[in-house]
Amino acid sequence: MHLFQYRRDQLFCEDIPVKKIAEEVGTPFYLYSFNTLSNHFKAFDDAFSPIPHITCFSLKSNSNLGILSIFAGLGGGADIMSGGELYRALKAGFSPKKITYAGPGKTTEEIEYALKNDILMFNLESSQEAECINKVAGKLGKKARIAFRVNPDVDPRTHPYISTGLKENKFGINIKKAMEEFKRANAMKNLDVAGVHEHIGSQITKIKPFTDTVKRVKEFIKELKEEGINIRYFDMGGGLGITYKDEKPPHPRELAKAVIPILNDLDCTFIFEPGRVIVGNAGILVSKVLYTKKSGDKNFVIVDAAMNDLIRPSLYGSYQEIIPVLKKRGAGSMVVDVVGPICESGDFLAKKRKVQVLRQGDLIAVMSAGAYGFTMSSNYNSRLRVPEVIVRGEKFCIARKRETYKDLVRGERRLEL
Image (cartoon, rainbow, N blue to C red; front, side):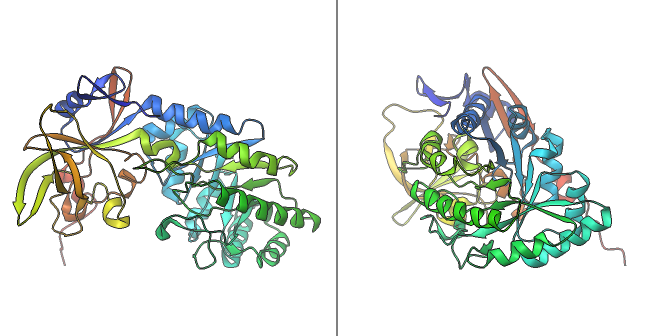
């Protein structure tokens, strides 16, 4: 449940009209509901309260400091993928003891940075990575807590670009060959083999892929313990989906009800890495209609937001609901392509979409844009990255300022050879 609702045909975020914010901030901009973010996090975290666990929010889905500080304040942890995300997590107030570091390509500098901050655990993806972390930890006189990401070869039944748990994916180690890697790492003097990690994909809308994975990994953990490897953490990753159009994903409590009975006797602390399910429906992208035009039998609505602001429709062909900020009674509807100003045919937010008839100056809201929206944005065509705004009740704050032209060239210089 999110707090973007119509009141007398006007879209509100909590208790503020979206139109009012647009008038003060300008368009386009990302808009988030504080109470939706907080409620979603607590709904997930509370669902797993019967078992020892840490809810590590996935920074790759949304890394705004204002948003991260909400989850840190609620006692959450952080799932990071880079040194930059570690920096953000620490700035936002997450305890290093609740930070897990995933990703297949950590650099020596990033590993050193994480070790110096004594994070909870590295999630490893290869034997060479284990060797590298062992070497860096030895150099620093530290012992690195690690888990290997195992690939259980379970089909998450999602888009192939965000499926990560099949044997043909680049992530993790084949679970059938993982024992050898765990034993090898366990013999390295600067590594503490503390956990097992898995993550099969994103935007998963069925429970069965989760339960199949948990059962498979649970048996593997038991085998590791029988070999004398002291596994204390089972990192189950994330991936629970949300409703963009007509999907009906399970509520976190339904997922918990299905997996907790499987996990009860494992004697581990369980780590979860939710991202999209927390922030996806807690944010929207607000944009203004610049022009409308007809070309042949096609109608185009050209708005001031573009693929550089929200790339999911262009990259994945994904559906994002588009609604008017102001409903107009009797306005009628039409089928349009909603496109941006970028010089690419792939620059669109929606194709062949039935919407209220839109005119120059109208405002639209692109729904379910809180996850993988701003974090995947760019300066393509030297466009300024947009502001991020957070609403709480009747107040709002700008959590990230709109970039300026000076920001575009910061760090660059003219050639002076």
